[in-house]
Length: 564
Image (cartoon, rainbow, N blue to C red):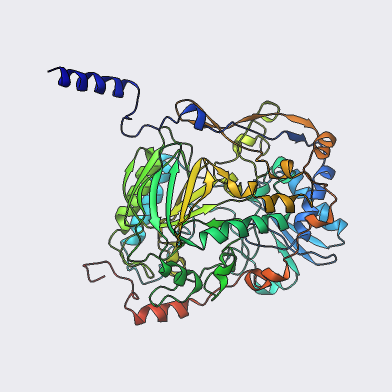
């Protein structure tokens, strides 16, 4: 009797202390585990001249991975393209920078946003699902005559597209360099990068925008040495994430394009895939894959829970949890209309055998990607900028800081089949979660356990060799400190940190490097030439992949168990 009573009292204490959470609630991290929030002081931008030095560095530097650049030497004919979502001062800064580089420039400003639908609302989601179901009711292997959203790419679909623009090959030949969003005969992505990374003046005028590329290369290298030796990975997060998976040798065959049954175009050469030997260096600089990308192998074994407050749409509270088994989503908790939309998207594609995937469906874990730049910023509460159009840092989504060191974004879907899906207007359901506070442990093939990230802090920033290289540019403590760290409340909710403006000249004096340091104009070093070189963007012939998958029976694409 006494033993039963003590057990009963113990259970009461256990539950009262909150050791068990109700389903769908966020984890309550211990106070000592919560990182201290931080936000950089922002410059008070009052003129375009304050932004020109940043624009000029970006225009002159070489492009590599997640770091845009256009290698402008001076005198090139430039087409500069923006959408109306980019602040006028940012647009003016790039024009003035090009003029200072003696470049003739034409400017095109396209309408941004959607006129009929507010993305992320229930009406929006219902219309997107209606169009998706409509397309899936038709023959999967016939190009539809009706225009459908660009479902073959990343992110949630847009039911209505406005401000479309087409530029002919002949028109493009008038220019040496194109700077801006997607252009080309079919508005192909990748021919020029957009300005999502600098849509406000404060995003352009930031240490993260012009951070030393040589230092970022070395940080990437340090991380990649560990990832390339990984056999097993264990991941946890302060909001309740806990999952693990195996790095099978087969994954590296896929990355290097030698897999006998999976072939993906790596539709942009920025992903650096499908070239033997390319995995010697980080695949996609500044966007390091901490889970294998694209095609889904039979042995995929990611299992556990990924919990995050941030996805493609507005922040969620309680956070959304994705339950994984065999590398695929098997259940959702919380998440509101985002989870509902995602769940329905998986259900309507569950019986479709996508090319390059060993099992049908679009629930595959496709990426768990790491940012490496400690100075990238995210949403902040700044009273002086509150409510100002294209200025208030609270307009930044929680996906915008994905390149910050230690910040993770996960992606699911069947994007490895995007070469097919873009042609046939088929959904691949590549949707995301974002994670500020992840811990990532690697068990290497020789039995070592190496921690890469500790509660969102990238440990490579503490490496003595990284610090020694940072000293070439300035004070290593300032260069390698993380400027933007979200605040986590005691109940486990993540919110934007608070900051304020200071005079521009004072802010420049406190940068961790000299703004006029010529080393900030990054040039791809010879040792990385074979990885990133001149082939900035390569488009692969879909016929090559159609023929490949015809031979193994995945083209024409079929619904499993039906004649379609």
